Image (cartoon, rainbow, N blue to C red; front, top):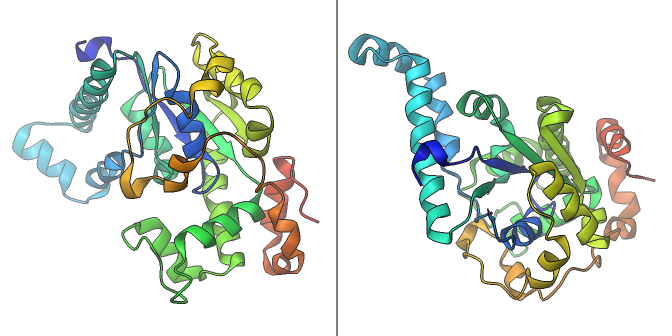
Length: 278
């Protein structure tokens, strides 16, 4: 499969701990879709465009314009995606990397045609509880389990690791995503809807992607099929999961008093997404 035949990718966007790994497992079970663990590598490329002398150096020394750089980068990315698709005999790659939430303008430049986004949201308070539980080391207050995640570290350094701080993280990520995307280039799912009616929500995504509707089969085989392991870039609990459940939905209600310190902007965006916060 030459790069010219590799389809533009789709990107699965969402705040950490919003269920993107679950959705990845489901989509990866489609016979034509590859949705691997987090790739991370794209986050480094926009740095060159922001580096003051980089583009000028390319222009002066190599007669290379911004357009040339993006074209070369597009070929590199499609080559990497295409290699994986050929290995699996699949036709569409969906890149699921939560850290890409602020790369939408760059991704549009990289793929000016055919780019699509799948956005998964979760109740802010349930998400905050999960963020705190996943990233914070319970044995050492203030210490993070994954210290190499630059975005998470920067946020915790500024806003702390208590629930109100994680609510701000949810707010920032989802506001950036939703403000960056037009309605016709994305499909929006709520985690709560996904776990309660997975077939209907997977069907919604597949229609958006113009893929064959294998939603019922996907839900059955998602946890019996093999998936590439993601190492530290994956919630390891997914490997022990045998099915889809909604046990964590509404867990925030046990801690109602803890949410009073959250800024009103969190409740406003939650309401916009159809969530209650009282």
